[in-house]
Length: 112
Image (cartoon, rainbow, N blue to C red; front, side):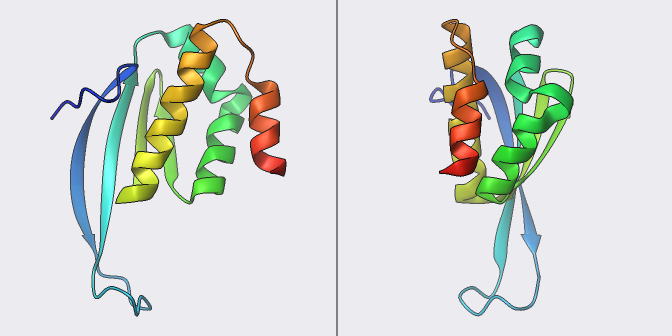
């Protein structure tokens, strides 16, 4: 299923029921897995950071799991968190494509 609101990447959605105990707000949390494919491998590597450090910071800040293989990301977590991660990654990717560096943006994200 392709969505037009994420122009920098294509993605599909898979839903998995997470039957974890301890959630008193919801009986069942629905976990989402999204696959994001970036069209430029070199830009994707710049976005991901050295040793995927940028991805780890984004994942830790938002509370998702992000796995990278080449220019493909798999993002797993609660639906809104996954979609927020995709939005952040696509916005940062667009900034990179305009020629701006990310090192200040990512370090600001961690401190702010």
